[in-house]
View 1 (cartoon, rainbow, N blue to C red):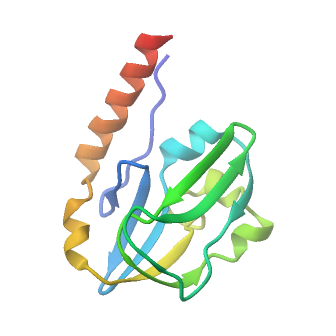
View 2 (cartoon, rainbow, N blue to C red):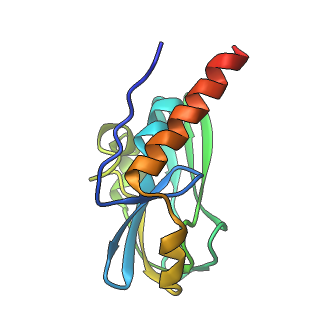
Length: 139
């Protein structure tokens, strides 16, 4: 059984399933539809602290759910300038609107060239298709 995942255009994607919406020197970051469907019902989100400086790949946030947990990693280096406080009381926003109301944080990007290393929608779609194929072969 194959699941369809939403992969909007206009965003960039990491191999750890974060999406990035770049606006000037800022990047809004969240997790993809793939992650929220794998986690199922999201119960809690541990948000980063404002003004925290992160290097690409460092721990950014943790999402706890019925289906386990997901460690969100910084897809680019920078400083946290805003967090989505609505997720504290309504973590299910990630399930309902992963690319809109379910965003996690906004960063001031310190190295814009890192954005070039992220996948475009067609590349990310192929990537998750490969993951699904590998998973179905091991079942």
